[in-house]
Amino acid sequence: MEPTMRTKHAQVWMMMVFGMLAVATCVWAQQDKTPPAKNTASVAGNRLTIEVSGGDQDKPIENASVYVKTVEEHRMKDKKFEVNVKTNMQGVAHVPDAPSGRVLIQIVAEGWKTYGHWYDVTDQNQVIKVHLERPPKWY
Image 1 (cartoon, rainbow, N blue to C red):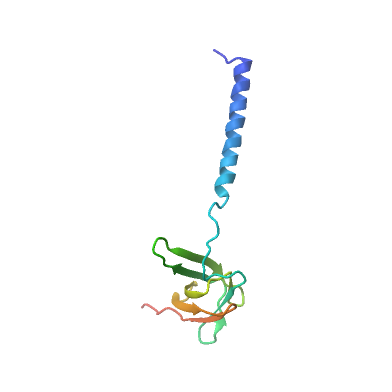
Image 2: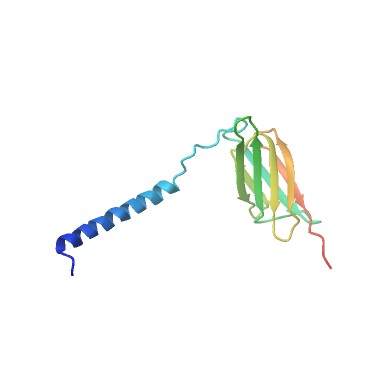
């Protein structure tokens, strides 16, 4: 039994409607619904600069992953700030709109010992210098 022309048109319309709904759902899902975290310690315009070097010659380490995290603990809900940036060819990573206060800076670079340390960010445009060491050799 072959569908009639009217049934075919209805099927085409239904497929178009479902396709449009699928596209709209994807676009809607990709939009960030959560408002930006209003960290009371974060001020727009703050720019934390992290300079990463390593070895005996203090050479800049390129393409290192720099994680900056902070947790503002409250009674009901903790507010978090997390960002991951990479160092450039000069070993410098910039964190825009960085929070002030206590932050955890973790650095992971291939061929270097992983680094993690808590810092107190007090200056609006603070520069933090980090020196990485080579990992111990296993024989």
